[in-house]
Image (cartoon, rainbow, N blue to C red; front, side, top):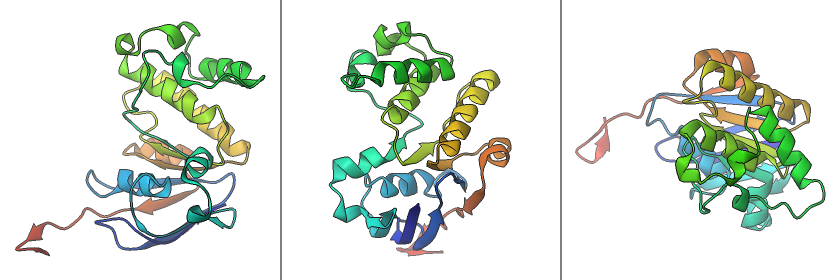
Length: 205
């Protein structure tokens, strides 16, 4: 279970909520309301006061690299530090290649996409490869920022089906989306963020 206790991410008030194993929570709100900052704070990628627990263990009790492996954030605009996607995957484990093959099939990609220069792939291809990268080592929690943005309806449906499979496997999923239909299809719970008030004269209006 993922549990958030008084997590303070500007411009939001302290937030407390929990997401059970196999549960999906959607974070809603207009642009600028803090959806991405909240996801990154849970993943320990954005500084924030408060507490985040995974199965009873507080994030500061777990080394940061291990926490980010267990609580995995996938951006809507994924970054890459390699020339090809294959170089970004650790395939040293015996079953890693078969896992990757299944993930690629699930999001309608072929093995050729792994060896193509990332600069030559479409935004949607890079996004789906990044989702495979996030899932291959089977994290306990998935934090997904607009997981199907920019995808055509058929491919977006495949991504949603992959998310459902993660839930059936007992993983917790928290995702931010502007797509109300997608939220209706996937979410068991919702967290609504309000648009921040404008700042006037050093104080919020």
